[in-house]
Each structure stands twice: as structure tokens, then as C-alpha cells.
Length: 431
Image 1 (cartoon, rainbow, N blue to C red):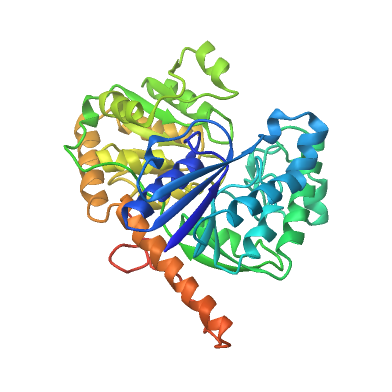
Image 2: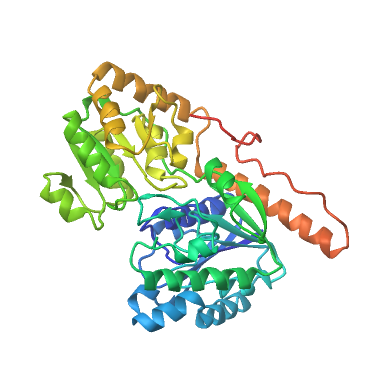
């Protein structure tokens, strides 16, 4: 099988890129032929160096690097992206059996969807956020600091000053959302959800779009080894963009209240404020460096998202190492945390987080949570190999259904693809 993976970056600057790169490597290791199409020139992850994996660079600019008017137009509909993608697909020595899109908002735009859907092979889109439905992409009211309850593209949605930047940015994003609906029209799209919460929310927010939903967990590139010793750690660790919607400020406030140090790995608009308040901010680090810091310093990892984050990978990586996790009840990561057994699931509020942090000051409890987290995770690990098996099962089924349609055979409604390596859907199963 030849799989083409299309993403905007070829190195991890966030969870979506990390998943795109790791899934490409996983598929190549599983025996598939993989072509990785990188939209924006830049760094390339060494994981993409594999005999069965080719990489092509479309050489597109990031819309945020363009003059405002041009960036806005390209974000809504980038004809150049469509042309370059079409040429790249035409030039492949072997036609793809499946096309898998991971990102499209920074350079590709909805203009690439007709190109993909017109290739006569299955097209899969992994939903790392809510951009398929919501103009600002995260289904979150930045003006109210709460998840959005409005119907996407309704009159109330169009009027809401919900954008994190400005009303002008909101207008551009609405234009992009409208062009997305136009690009899909009557096409049927297969989407992959990385958590149960994403699927439940999106199934009711896509309007007339014809979408089939599938559920596959993100991969976690952690080898099984000796469990960490979180009771020896000195800090609650936050990894990711330092933004209000991701709750970085909540970690700092709660840690001060609980009397525990907070350690931040990442960068973002809250960085200066956190430093001024005395927090330890390390900036971005490589995946290997993050893993080492967690093992050395983390008493727990915290993902306190105010928005309905689909699946912070850091929580899964912490559990895999035997480090407790404190997860927001709104986050997809909460589905993998057993409250009181492998960490804590709390509301994204400083008081609730502080209570969890105070409990973690108990060495015996922290050690028990970490050991249970390790044992539960490795009973059904989210390895790259398991991820590849789930993807290949999905691709194979979609390919067979496409051939049946071409032959005039009516298919029955599809069931969700098994997301677990043993063949059972994960559903509400916790580690």
C-alpha cells in the first residue's frame, strides 16, 4: 500500500505535526510505502529518514509570514497550494492508495480538498482540533474564556467576538470556514478522531457536511523501560504552548497555592508573565530532553486546558513513564487518566488544581499513582506499531469500499475502525 501523508510541517512544533511525522514513520516500519508531503519548508524530523519513506517539499509560505492582505486571501483559498499539490501528486512514480491530511490552516487552505478528493482514492483527515466546524479552530470563546456553545457559522457565531486576535481575523477565519464548506460540497470525507470527546462533540456540529467518523488514538513514542520515581521529583511540570486557553496560568497559580514549584517547558504569550511571577520557564526542548526532564523533575504532569483539547500527548507520555497526570476534565487526555489511581481529573480552575497538587505532596501517594499509571499504560500501550495497525486497517477497509462502489456494489453503513491493537474499540477505557 502507498500512503501519502500531507502536513504543513515536517518537524514537531506541536501535537499535530508530531503525530503526522510519527504516523509516517510507523507506517513505513509496518511495511507500507509512504510519501510525506511537507507544505512549508523548514526543519525535517530525523524520523522521516527511512528506506520506505520519501519526502517532498511543496515550498509554500506560512500565511503568518505574508503581508496581511495576502495572508488573509491565501488562508481563505490558496490556489497556489492546490496547484503545487496537484503537480506533486502527478509526479509520484506510484499512484497513492490513500491520502491522509493532517493540517491545512497555515498554508494549504481548503483549496487542497478538491485536489485530494478528485484523485479517486480514499481521503482521510485527522481532526487534531475543531477547524472542520469552528472558524477559530478550537471551538472556544476567547472573549469569555469558555468552550463555545454556538452553532458554527450561525448568525450568533458570526457576530461573536470570539477570535483570539481580532474581529478582522475572525472575518478571515469565517471566510475560510465558508470556503471549506464549499470545497467539500457533496463529497464524503472520512475523519479520524483522537479522543472520544472530539467525536461526540463534532458529530453534532458539522451541519450538512457528509462525514464518516472513525476513532484512532495518537501514537506515543516511548519505549518501555524502568518506571520513573515521581516521588523524588520536585515540581509540577507543564509542557506546551504558554497560553490562557491551555491553562498555563492556572498551573502557576495553583502551584503557588499548594506550595509546589511549577516548571514550564514551552513558549508563548504568557511566558513573560510567568517569568515575572518567579516561575521556572525552560522554553522549548527536544522530545528526548523533555523525557529526561520529566524523569528528573516531574512529580506530576499537568494539562489544565480550558478549551476542549483533543489529546495532549504529554499526558500519555507521562503515564507511559510512570508519572502521574493532572488533567482538565475538558481535555481528551482525561479519558486516559483514572481519577485517584493514575492521577487526577479536575475542572480547569485554580482551586481544583491546587487541591490535586497538595495531594501530590504525599510521597507515598505520588509513588502509588505513578506505579499504577505505568502498569495500566503498558497493559495496552499506544505504540507506533499499534497506531500503524489501526491506520492500515482503516485504509484497507476504505480502499475495499471504494472498489465496491466503482463496481456498483452498495456498501452497508461503516462501523468505527478498531482503535485498539487487539481489535476492540477503546471507547471509555482508561489506562
